Image (tube, rainbow, N blue to C red; front, side, top):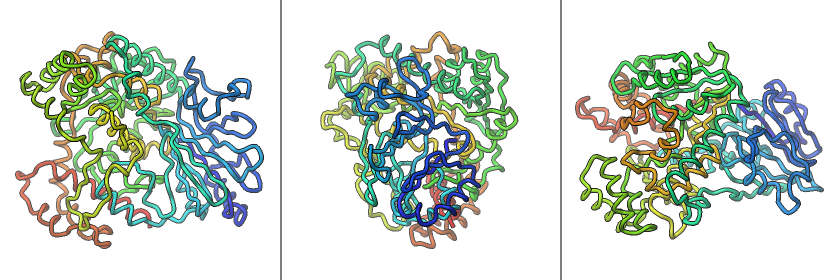
Length: 574
């Protein structure tokens, strides 16, 4: 993982020696020191000097040729282009940049890349910007105190980055944003937004053009990360997304190890598909079984998680994948995570509605035909759903979950994330894709192995996301297949059984078995826990749910798991 800590202001001058000693003991070394600013990084975190007063922490690649950014001079960056614009438009990667005005080290900007590959939180009160909250707590810079107002909102709107965190006086710099610090004042602004690429003038005009762009961007992202890391563990689920990542690793010089997780209960055994893809790579597939009895609910969350993000399935899967990684001596984990979001996996009639809005009746009819084939319904039903989508008010970015909470007052979802403020002329499919993209920003946060190794999600890299956003939503369902453009892009590289499959693996049966086995434990965990102690849970509604028979369950038990993840995080902050 990338680890850095930037200290500024009074906290630095008051306890500089003590803080520095603690950070060095935690494996962070000072690489830049001035009277009002110090930067510490770990030995395995790259630091690139962009010019005399700008440092890049992490990895960045040039778009033009995929080569790593090893340092830039003013002659490389055109005089009329600012550094921030140069990075966003000409480069990509997992990085943060620290840039200082020419005459004052007490003022600086922190830029976080659009993919969010380097964690970045800050505290003006404590005088720090860091990826490593745990080290800052140990150094006495940050106090680990729960912000209960955030927890209340997190209960209603889980699984979403908002810029707030569960720790008092600690905020998160959202991906694609800049933090400007001047003395004791701080402001943030947005440098990159997906809405730039979801416009009529940006769209690809044909499916072959779209497929070529998607293939080029995905291949470049995977190959660049593989070259940077050298030894990778590919988390090969057997689905389309991770298989595409595997296809791009086929000619890589990196040493690739493949793994797959299965469960003893039906629904999540995808090893046949994963084996077919590992065979294409010529690699052995390491298969491990997620046992129902191994599911835990009281476990240490990732040390640097500043908000609830890890539930039992992530924890159990992480234990198995981390063990394989240690056995094989890998440097990074490769995942197809975020592929559904990037590749336009929309489950509504929005693509056909978009086609009508932008291309007219004939295009809408073709999209409705594809929609009917995709969802195995009649053409006329697909048309009715399309008309309903066109006449209905815009779908909200998030629906508040008020189940099992005592105080149901909440703010509007549109205020939670900057991407939720959609342009007035935006199409339904673009809105749904971008709302989902905002939710995908949390995918790295709940993964404990990302605190010791790099976790690469190339399908969420900036160039891939941009290319996919330029693909009209109706192209993603062409021919009656979801993620159709991605399938076409890699049709020659995937086994037929993966290329043409319509099903998806699911851990729902496994999760249901875990709930049934642990129901008494879960009941006590919540009804005697910190959330209930702070008056946030509706104990009566919870007890009523736990009293239901096993054969009377819907998927409501997944909400119980969300509550347990929040409870677990809170318990481990004190």
